[in-house]
Image (tube, rainbow, N blue to C red; front, side):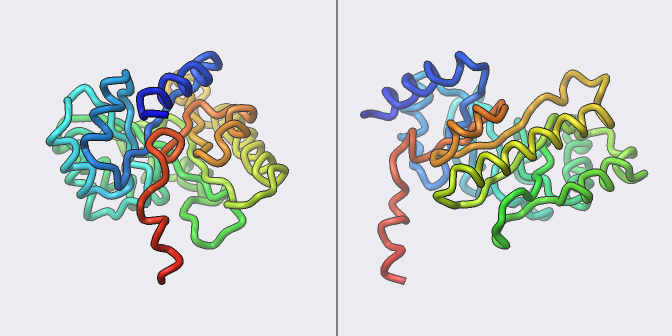
Length: 230
């Protein structure tokens, strides 16, 4: 199936349950993004700042760009003028830098706090306790140019659907507690970004509001064919 066909099929599947589709375009050429755009897709996710900036400059300006990978503080300034949502905030230090750069551009930048839910050391994210500590801090209260609109999590890369389901469930329950404790009066705190191509159906069952899909839309990344050569 073509990129356009894949998007049409996915939108029909997930929009019925009011879930947003984030097309993960990392490593994909501009032509692929243009094909997805022509099919009606407007939200794209990238994990490399340089690649996102290059695509932003070449593509239509009504695209909403999401930063979905680990973000270094020294790279924030490059995406601050146009980024729609930073899904991968994993420290107060990063949030402070986003606030600083947003202020320079007279913007309020929406962010998700990335929560560590996987049983894998390679994943980034805040622990449940660290999220609470951050939100209670005086430093966070001073940040006027960022808006926390929800949480993001990446499940363990495993064949066990039971484990994936439990990790997503825990994040949803934690989200509800955070909403009640810190954002009760803020309608903007509503997003739970969880689920990728391998597990998005489980994520939707567990209450995800955003799914980040790459290979399901664009096909496998070329880089995967070379892993056995390393």
